[in-house]
Length: 293
Ligand code: SF4
Image (cartoon, rainbow, N blue to C red; front, side, top):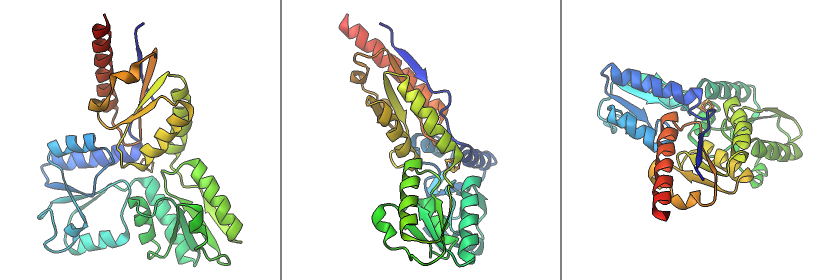
């Protein structure tokens, strides 16, 4: 029985990831010594391709005099964004900043800043150490609260007008459950679901795709929030879901007893990588058939 390999035609990077990659490539092509402040996206394979084009990665010490990275000509801010203080320090250092902040994240930063300035208790539902969340806190003088699990809700001031927003890549399920817990504790809550529409739409499309195949190979960075959420979506409807970062991790035993395998990826997984994984799967399947005959 031949194996049907289906690449999810709705997969591929989101607009924010495409944009920051394009900005990085443009600066490299123009011959600038270009560095990204932190991992430019959560996908090692794509980062490695950009490294081959000349991109380097630096940490925040580049903002200090004598910090790492020497004297880059361009510093790329990733799609997650940064706190305003980072832009100010870069300016003081005379660094040329290429702002790759995703416009969807910029919108969340603006909402958080506006309500913080009006005296609200600002609450971000998401991961406290996620770069996007850290950036948003910077727009609230680092006074906003982060809710990641129900226990965090007990830290909120119950009698203060409160504005709640979401890290763009959390699941709808997490948003709904945390918002309900916050509403139970705090009397005056204004909320805005700032989950990225791309992520929300992808969840539904992916659920349908994962149901339609016997097994799913999900491709994405192990440190990517969006990949975690999307992989969980696959697993919830198809227990034969496997998460890989590179084509090398494909295992022939995953193909046992199945007629179709779907390949999909997260918001930071390039489409070309899905094609490479598809080719690796086809090779594994051919080797397996040859070994069995
Ligand atoms: S997932 Fe959404 S918010 Fe995040 S970078 Fe992509 S488009 Fe922007």
